[in-house]
Amino acid sequence: MSLPPGTLFLLAAALLFAIGAHGLVTCRHLLRKVLALNVATTGVFLLLVTLGRSGTAVDPVPHAMVLTGIVVALSTTAVALGLIVRLQRQRP
View 1 (cartoon, rainbow, N blue to C red):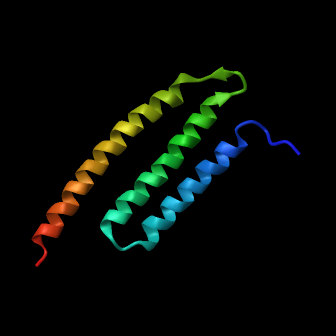
View 2 (cartoon, one colour):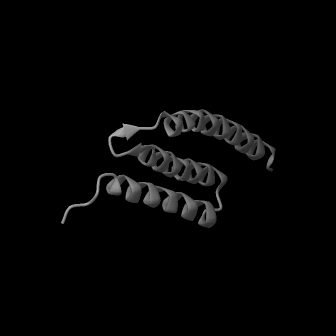
C-alpha cells in the first residue's frame, strides 16, 4: 500500500497542530503556552508548504506566506516572552 505524495507531511502538520492546541488548552504556565503556540504555528506552516506543492508545480504564494508568518511568529514570541518576564518580576 502506497501513500499519495505529501500525505505524511499532512499527517505531521495535523499532529503538530493538535499537540500545540492541546498544550494551549491544558497548560497553565505561560511559558508553556507560548511554546505550545509555536508548535501549533509550525503545524500550520508545514500545512501551507505542503499544500503549496500540487503535483510538479510549486506555488510561491504559500511559501511567501510562511516566510511572513515565521517573522510574525518570532515577533509575537519575543513580545510574549518579554511580557512573561515582566509579569514574573511584578509578582510578590
